[in-house]
Image (tube, rainbow, N blue to C red; front, side):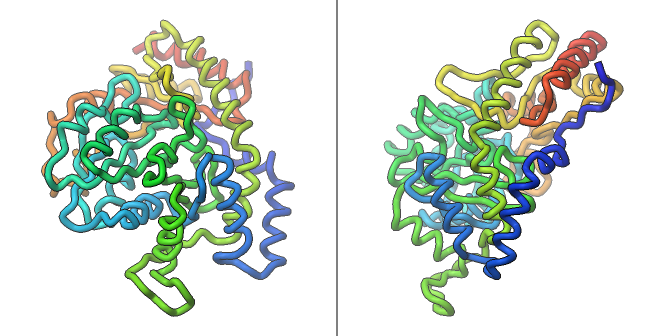
Length: 374
């Protein structure tokens, strides 16, 4: 077997395989002379909604704005509380704060590290206005109890599907599970399953009036040019990114199947290895955005894998309730024991569509050997 280092992700190979299609898409936009809120963006929104089972999609500048504007479109504002998970990128909580509300962090299901519906229910107060579950690592949260809680307590529900493009919960696409009033936020950061070549995001919507509201909010509150009817935001996906994302969208399902095949290989070959993969629950079709394992001596494992040329990352090493930026919310160690233990143990292994079978076998061999050392 080759001993060439295996990076955590390889954008050069990804781009090389798509280069002819990407070049055509770029040329199409450059030749058009239209760069913001034009036909490429409109086509991408239609195609994205169709691919992911929504009535409409509203493209924005990034995933944080997708969450922020979705909350604002539902009236979330100062004084409101939004219940969410403490294992996620900080941008999930930042979006809540930018909407003027206060994030309330709760513990997670140890099997998936997604929000624990029972913990969410216990966190409800008279100030709670919304639930924001995160479909972490591409695996759907257990949504039926959360949807029931939202109906019972008349709460807004916004799905953070930024890592879960095309994932399904009990056969239904995530981002659309809240029905007519639900919304799902997507990120197109380059590392995502559907990644841009810069940044981007979108909101999946089933209510056309809400979609119109979101289009107004993303464009400074304008309904017509220079007529600002509300306090909006500036968050517009540009035409170049939209055209490039249309290329990727056509490949998304094939990429997902490759990710799932690699994850199944890892699941099988790492059984009994000393690391504990998170796995997939019976209700879920995960899109395997990340392949995450747990190990009680993570630092030693990372070092041993690094010596063997295997790239790894940690998603996410510091829970949100312990992040310095959120200290004013009053979180402290011991508040969320499942989150805190998991954050000390999780490690992401290389998994991307361009990863060759031989390289995946090397990852398995290296993990097995490294775990024995640790």
